Image (tube, rainbow, N blue to C red):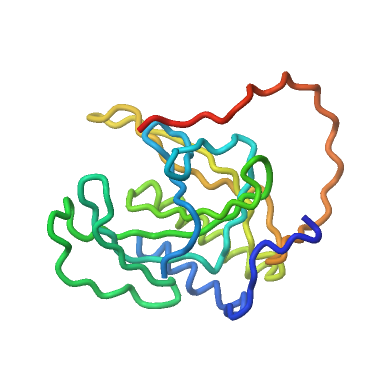
Length: 216
């Protein structure tokens, strides 16, 4: 990681200006690039048109300048309209929802991330959520970034593992919710504080060949 530039920061605002904007994500329960990543109904994190499963031990750097908020309108399995803006700007204005929108305009928050290891290293992905669980995960991350910037503005980038939690719903049974687990903080160019050498682990059996894909 020492020589890896994680995020180009040309034209970005000062890191210190993140705090107010990030805390606004939690207060209010620009589209970002890359493929779409999401947690499916089975509790697995998947990305892309083929619904490729994320590797369990992969880590992802979240761009702290990529938080967006806005609205999306869904039809039958397709996006009919989407209006997003950086959280440093007001919510975008929307008029009447597109025809055939199932729920009209739904509020949405999002961010972008980059994979740092494994088969997907270098992959950039966009994660957006309209669900309460997804919004809460991003709100918690935004507050954590704001606190980190106040404590050490030189390392504002959270490196996360994509985890899953669940609860039992009276009507729907087990409902999975996303978890963005912060494992360390790094600078915008990817540098992190030196870590103590880890104890050797016993050899694990070789992983099966190929990547699993979800059928949706």
